[in-house]
Amino acid sequence: MPERVDHCYISKECSADHNTFQDLHRWIDLPSKESGKNHRSERHAYIEKDRAEIERIWHEKGVLEWLMHIAIDNLDSAIQYAENHGLRFDVELKYNGRDVFDLLKKIRMNPDRGKILDEYIYGADDIDLDEDDDWLDEDDEDDDDYT
Image (cartoon, rainbow, N blue to C red; front, side, top):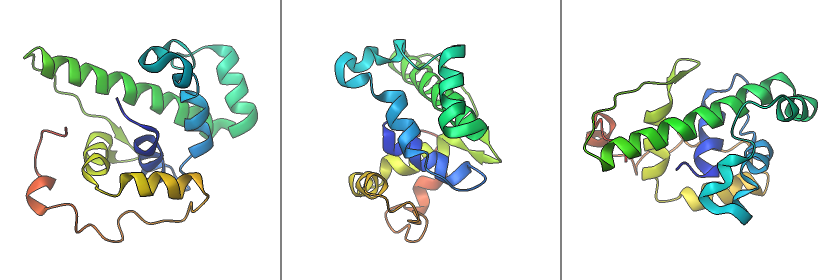
């Protein structure tokens, strides 16, 4: 299941204004502190009350990010399920022209992902994760297995 750093990275890479929407992603997954993996029963489905709250705070762009967060979580679960059961499940998800699962693979492979999350949390919203891609081997860029 994607972690907050994964969602923030995808938002930063794909959103028009390169915003991490870190506060929104934190809000979406806040129930996980009490519910663990079952937290998706809250804020992970299109519910008008949640949409209105998100739009009030984060405006229309926030609603889009929320819906992408939900889609990414659910598609990632489907991919993991298929892999665990020997099933074929090919899916592509593009967000403003960027392949979401390639980005997810990239951030998951990054040995500094904890540091990246800390930078998001403590407000360094202007970090450039593509600045130094030494940790990403060229061989891995073409690997279709993103996990």
